[in-house]
Image (tube, rainbow, N blue to C red):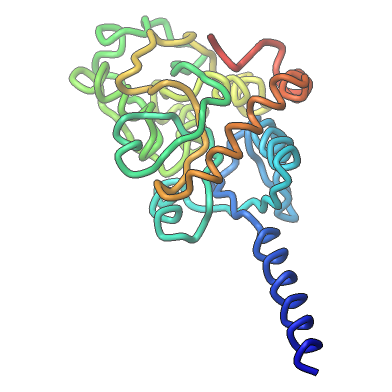
Length: 257
């Protein structure tokens, strides 16, 4: 009887261990749409380049990853508080953020760009933007960039999301917006952006504000999970999965040099 109980206990312990290993990994994604990287449909299902890359890495590393939407300005606090297990939300690797969380290796990189109304004739410089109103997203590196290079001569209007800044640009309520080049291009190619607005192109790169690429965020203590994610990045880049996914969304390499 005692042996039988011991065997049952061992089986139960094994089951608990398997369940613990298979526990879902909550992946924090900024709650607002950010095409072509992350976007929810009416039923709450998320899709986009970043979602596909996340799923490929999680499949490679046998992780049960679950998208968990979080407001952008609260996404790092949600991670450190244990409400999510990692951040995959086009977050740039910066020294300020590295004081609080750890990052994976980069999985893409993008410069900042300036979008303006179609009739704009000014140059994308501090002098050209003098007296203009520039929309920026709160808590973003693009806000930091605009403050550093345009803040002394222009008025910055801060929005909760980049989408709201884009809407105000389309409506003519602001003169320009500084944002991620690839995400801004998706807006400019959309029905609401193609007739109203245009890109002034990528702005000069500044690593002090824009960081060293886009990476996944982790708690300082979760080195094992970060290492798995890094292994997944290497694997999907080596086996062609990364390039296959990228070609669905872009006509160029977004990984960077």
